Image 1 (cartoon, each protein chain N blue to C red):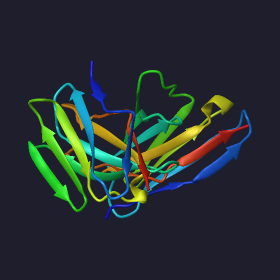
Image 2 (cartoon, chains in turn orange, red; image 1 turned 180 degrees about the vertical axis):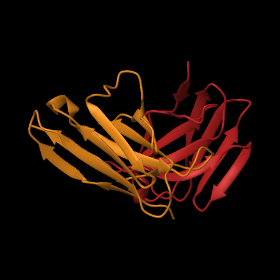
Image 3 (cartoon, rainbow over the protein chains, first blue to last red; image 1 turned 135 degrees about the vertical axis):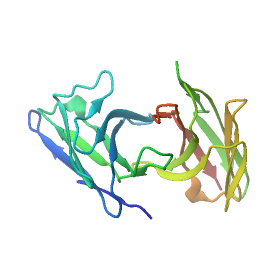
Image 4 (tube, rainbow over the protein chains, first blue to last red; image 1 turned 90 degrees about the vertical axis):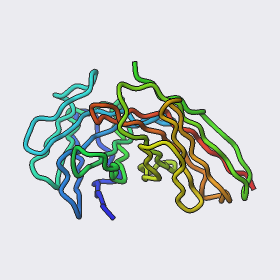
Length: 116
Length: 109
């Protein structure tokens, strides 16, 4: 089945530094990738939708200058958390889909970010 | 506005059957998904319903009634490993997924 690889699985960084999270579709071309954030005991919160070769569409309330998304190829999207603060500590999950039709999302394993 | 409702938490006994309900109000409908999420892990796809009726897949079944804006996930022969959160998500007319808050299922021996 389709596989999405997300890296790193865990990262600890100091406040003020930047962290890059990669999301790769391993056996299919992901025209659209989604980035989610999840707080403890909460559901997924969509941060942004990323289409290959175009700028990401951010959800209301998500700072696009803080959460930089790049989707340069059909198999790779990156999320960079810039100037991280402790409140950015969270579980970040990417997902990918093969198109705009009704296809299930394939999720990466998530990245646990801790900002100290 | 768009809304997905599902119970926050449910408890069931190993070997038993449990039904997790989901009601929705969305702008259009292009299908309903159920995902399983274990603590600290990403969600995994369980089922997809776009037509009314019951879809059975092993121990798991999912039902949809579009006229009632209602779905349920039925888990049979519960196992301890089924302890997880179950997320209901509806794809709206813009092909955007609207997520429920998830139902935490606790399985007791």
